[in-house]
Image (cartoon, rainbow, N blue to C red; front, side):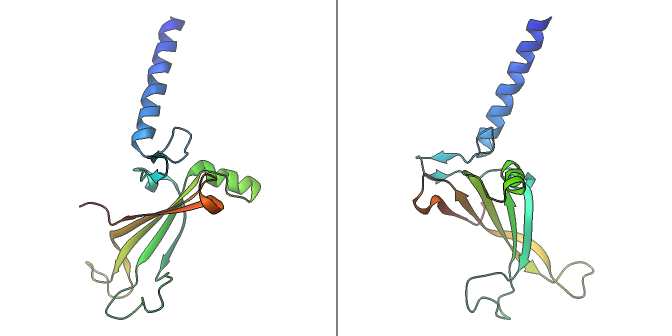
Length: 146
């Protein structure tokens, strides 16, 4: 009986590891790269720890024009990195932040005022990783495929 339990446990561990790799991260939450430095977009980033949302947050000087509604941004971080940050006050090496950029809209069923989040129009990532110059790397995934 103990041998069967071990085999079941081993099979579950293999399945969990394969799922994490398909999701674009190592089993322990670290980033996964192709060619050593090209980040794979984690498929499950929306299950990570949510850090913040903003409306119209941009580095562009003239981005919030009336003809161009401001975008919503949502920031997510790997749960293990968030837990470490809360303990130490520092983001650990191999921390991944995902910035999800969404259109904002005001035209919806019963909405009379205000804005709400629409379709994803861009995905970006920032990774703290000592393998990169300055210890950080930026990745722009552009809009997601339809």
